[in-house]
Image (cartoon, rainbow, N blue to C red; front, side):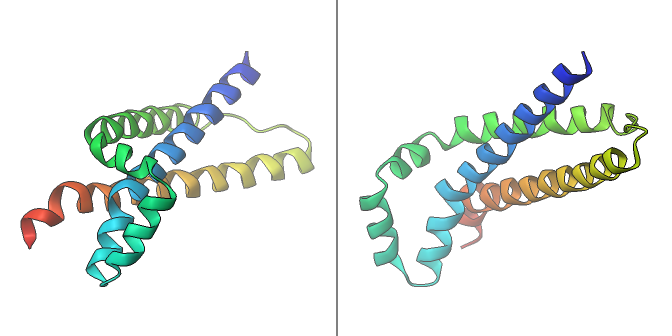
Length: 127
């Protein structure tokens, strides 16, 4: 039972990370490159990876999916925040280290999501 929770938690965290990375790639990276005057780099990037256009066309769905994954991941982190680690000192040390890494990945994913959201939906109205 506990192993299933960990596997599910790991899957949700991974989906949250990659979906927030997708929001960053679809919206923030091209906007950053264009704002730095590297429009030709964006054209080269899109010609090399044509699926970036599809991501940009479906950015609302991508942001909704990424937001849901981040919320579910955050809830799962909150619910397991006081879960016990093994008694063995080496396993306990590994458990605590993995929790810290998981927290770092979660907050990095939130940062990537917020950056992508800013460039996709907010920055266009500030210019």
